[in-house]
Image (tube, rainbow, N blue to C red; front, side, top):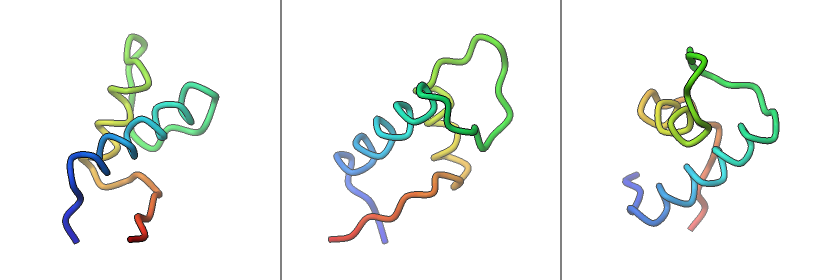
Length: 54
């Protein structure tokens, strides 16, 4: 299933908020990574635990 750009944006925003609030990170990170960059990396590696129901 292909996601629209709006769905991807919503998923990344929600995941970045979770990371900012202390959720465990699912990829390797460095000291200066912000939550949105971490969420993008998780998405690109296919590790975000989110399901889209239409």
